[in-house]
Length: 213
Ligand SMILES: O=C(O)CCC(=O)C(=O)O
Ligand SMILES: [Mn+2]
Image (cartoon, rainbow, N blue to C red; front, side, top):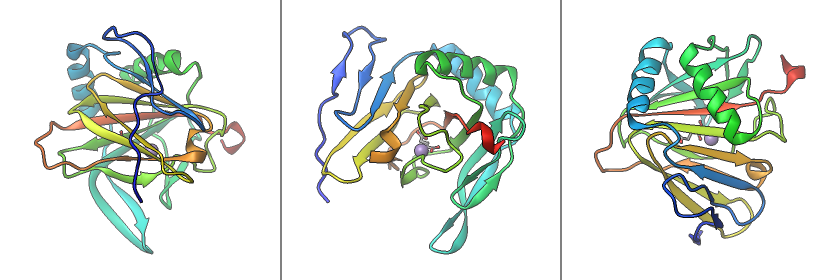
């Protein structure tokens, strides 16, 4: 399928902290560059790397349990378990650093979050295939806020029903907020690359439905 890559739908000025909406229809994905300064990014990256319990991700693909090289950590309020790619995950407790990042993400998304999935990509050979964050546990009307620390990586959207696409380079210290109903109409992926890239930690802050807790 041919993908039409279009210009950002809106750009809010041209200052370094300008926000950009990447999608023209059926949702909104707002990109905020340079939310965290490079010094804070480095210290948050190292803090998250050491404070959390990271595990290689396990997911069901074509009926088989696959162990990825990418590492993950699932953090949330007590009772926020989450089934992702057929595997149920139980949350670790919030750390002070994570609560600080969550607070910033909540301000940009204008919504509170009770959980966070963290992915650690060691190099460009590790990525994430096309998917939507549409698990049943997630509150449908809530946004998802994606925070990036470390190596820059290309993040793409493709529309589920039309030949439309968009992409953005997720920079160190950036936040991408995907608003409802983006997950119903669009898939996203993190492209693998042969370029040498620094390790990267991505955090997706999510709102799990209260009645599931
Ligand atoms: O690493 C990224 O930027 C994407 C992560 C993602 O899509 C997810 O955790 O669902
Ligand atoms: Mn996702």
